[in-house]
Length: 79
Image 1 (cartoon, rainbow, N blue to C red):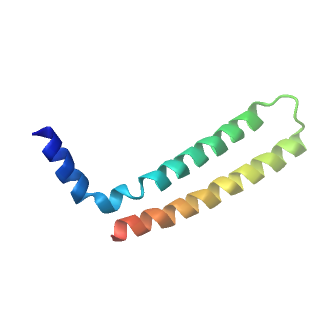
Image 2: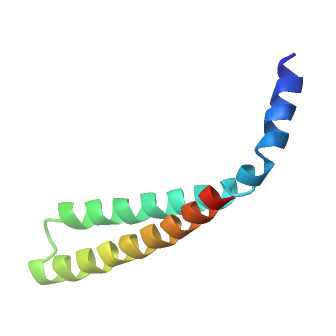
């Protein structure tokens, strides 16, 4: 019943499942970057110059990771 259905579904989506680890890594990386952005914004002791510098760096990193993820998702869709 359900096991055979799961195996069949896995076989059908084998190509997509091979990207799962990579997609999870992207998700974790974006989560960490977003957390860092939140921590910088909440830091009351950091002066505005340092905040801007750190925020800019984290936002650039998030954009770069997002672009990489977008390329990967395009590859997945093309398969």
